[in-house]
Length: 303
Image 1 (cartoon, rainbow, N blue to C red):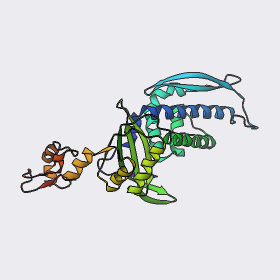
Image 2 (cartoon, rainbow, N blue to C red):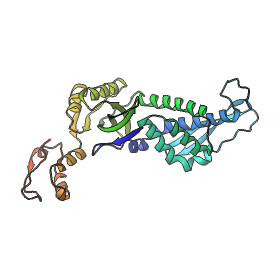
Image 3 (tube, one colour):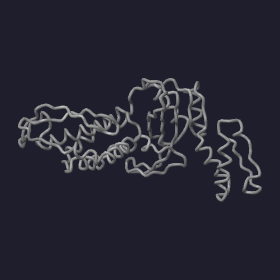
Image 4 (cartoon, helix red, strand yellow):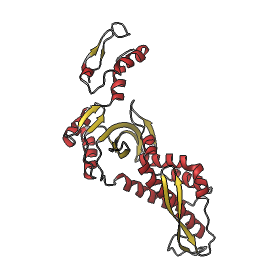
């Protein structure tokens, strides 16, 4: 069980994942293929190659079927049985269920695969429930597929890297505790965003960020020229150690929200307009603005 407790200005990781076509294409295909396999298993009363007394028939290979989705064409293998009785409503129901499926897969990537989520997906896509055994098998295979995607090799160069963290209430071994969720998003030369990593850490620190960055480099991350992140001291220390060649800029959203913490709420809008003229990466971002609408209040944008 996880409860959000994000800090201001953090990335909405599920929204980003929902826009990542590479992530979605691989995971949606895997999820749909697993549902088709589970449907056939339920129809025959036995897994592939399983000897079962109550078996209702036997498999007889596959035929190809293309499904057009918002993340591109998915080539699926539809199982067949020897008597030709097996049929599925998945393709007819998919378009109505696509939004829910995408949201569920993004949530699983962040929070982990659960029986409840898989059960909801299969019932939505197929219009009927599955046995606990089938749901458990799908759980394991989806979990393995998500883990494979999370650790995929990074072959292409990513010139831009965005790093952020949020805090979540996480249940582990029966105990609920706050943990940092470290997020790394890359942008390629064509402007496409990809989620490279979402990792849990006890807290946001130099060592946790260092481990994440070293893990990315071990997977092949290269060509990083520009990093955008907040002003966390541990994060900046990790960047100097692991990505010393990359330029750094403080995230503008974090900068503006941090600055507004130092002024009365009634002048937020006026101050925000002034502060937007002072990008955090520019020398002017280090000066003080005096004579603000708050009267004698001095706003420090030093960071």
